[in-house]
Image (cartoon, rainbow, N blue to C red; front, side):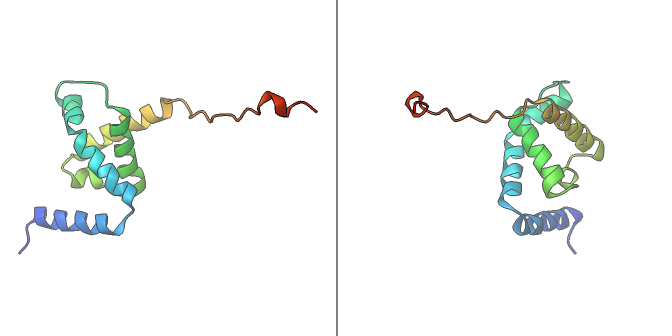
Length: 109
C-alpha cells in the first residue's frame, strides 16, 4: 500500500509530465528561493524577490492551484505567499517597450 507522501509524489510527477515547461521552470525557481520563503515566515522578513514571486504566481495561478499545499506549505502559508506575491506583482511598473526612432536622414525629402 502506498503512503500518502508517495501518492503525492506520484500525483506531482504526473502533473509535471503533463503540463508546460514554464510550470516546471517555475517549480525549479521556487526550489531556489526556499531560503527567502523560510526567512519570510520565520524571521518576519517582508520581502520576497521578484523571481520567487513570479514562480509562486505562475505555479499557483497558471499551473496547479493546490501545488503549494502539495509542496508542503499549509493552506494558510500558501494563501499568504500568493497574496503577498499578487500584491507585489500588481505594484510593479508596466514594462516599457523600446520605441523605434528613425535616423534623421530618413526624415528629409
